Amino acid sequence: MTTQEKMLIGGRWVDAASGETQAIINPFDASVIAQAAKAGAEDANQAIAAAKRAFYENGWGETAAPERARLLNAFAGLMEKGAEELARLETLNTGKALIESQCDVADSIACLHYYAGLVNKPLGHTYSVSDPAVCGFSVREPVGVCGMISAWNFPISLAVWKIAPALAAGNSIVFKPAELTPLSAIRIFEMLEKAGYPVGVVNLVTGPGRVVGQTIAESEDVDKVAFTGGIDAGRHVMRAAAGNMKNISMELGGKSPNIIFADADFDAAVDYGLFGIFYNQGEVCSAASRLIVENSIYDRYLEALVAKTKKIKIGNGLDPDVRMGPLISEEHMNNVLGYIELGVREGATLACGGKRVVKPGYEKGFFVEPTVFTDTRPDMRIVREEIFGPVVTLQRFDGEEEAVRLANDTSCGLAAGVFSSNISKAIRVIRKVRAGITWINSYGPVYNEAPWGGYRQSGIGRELGISGIEDYTEVKQININTNVAPTGWFD
Ligand code: TXE
Image 1: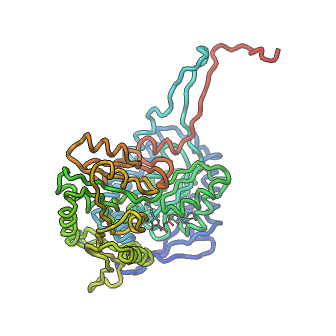
Image 2: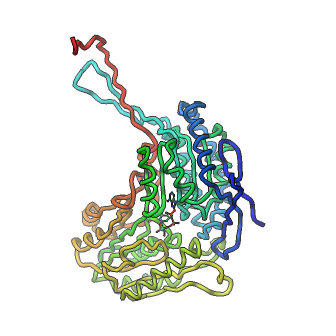
Image 3: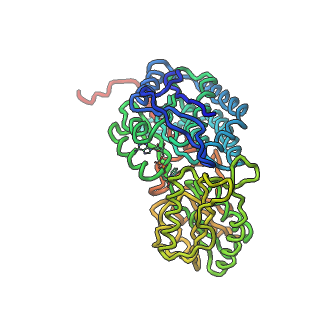
């Protein structure tokens, strides 16, 4: 049975003004699991107006820190109670392995507690100026109305990474999930409402990016827009946001390198090589889609990687043994398969995978085999462009200098890894790689406490950590003159 889902606008659960709906699909078997409201600009504008009233007229903007912390903790408590259902819903809507959805929910709850804890910690600072009679300090204040546009690959986590710091800082919000995956966000907003946020502080609008996303991005009443998605859509949002010079944060794609030196712990380097690209079917912004492997171990590494890749259990994400589900949609699956064909045409060698998985019971699902390419060149499109699927390319190098050169040969700069038992070398190399999220002898773990975001075309600003809340604030300097007297400047 499919459910009929509504949106939360100004404290009311409503359908789209047009009455239009959009079918939500389970990518495992292409079945329709829900009908979501397909909002238009009118709905988005109503949500923005509600958020504006809540912040500027109804006092939310002045809410004391302990109350903001209490509400976030209450929300976290509700998420904890509904954790298992939320995880199953996430898997149903995205196809990802249940164990991944469970991790996403647990990490999101921790993220909420982290930001609830940060609410009353010092975020401003004091400073000394040339005039000793002046006492100066800075405070951080909420930006105001925050529009949030999110992606389909980690619907719960990406929502919480935005919602938690924004509400902790005292903003009101209008959230737009990706059109393919609104279901967990709808449950999350039911929880936010139940936690007791005042009317209009939290608004959810489901609908297409080019309409709802565009309206949020260009509205003069939105003070900040936070975006996660592809680089092209990010560019549209930046342009639209220029009208009123919005504060913007962008978490975009990547083509991240993982450098494997010959002196690395071999088994760990192979294991993380898999984890870095095949987790969440490779639909990960920080995926290590380029494995850069030292020549002397290249053949052995390739052989071990391929052997393990062939053993990955693909299937229905709800099966607890499954480690890789289907891709998000038929269109995306076809894009990924198109890249694989392109790689072969470009002259790379398929070491394994490369096909759609069509076995009994899986015919309707959007499955692509985990795929490894060898014999690649740095100018190939499969090495340069984000594929956002279970496809990894291997490249050879000799020595630190070449490793760094290959790693930095990209217009992105989201993440990077280095595997070596020589920590001095690993640090030296990672410091030279132009990327915002890096790991040494590990790849992939996300820490709520650490700033997440990229260099170059991978984004602007940082989510998570202290930067995550700072990005939802404006900084105000307050200068107090303790020697009150006329200046006499114009006398
Ligand atoms: O994402 P989009 P798509 C990359 C990945 C993927 C490609 C396209 O390479 O293949 O992007 O994926 C909203 N104004 N990533 O098309 O379009 C949209 O509704 C305002 C990387 O699914 O970027 C959704 O809510 N909003 C990424 C959000 O933007 C717009 C995660 C993301 O959608 C808009 C996802 C517009 N003009 C895809 N156009 C990552 N970094 O993790 C779209 N949207």
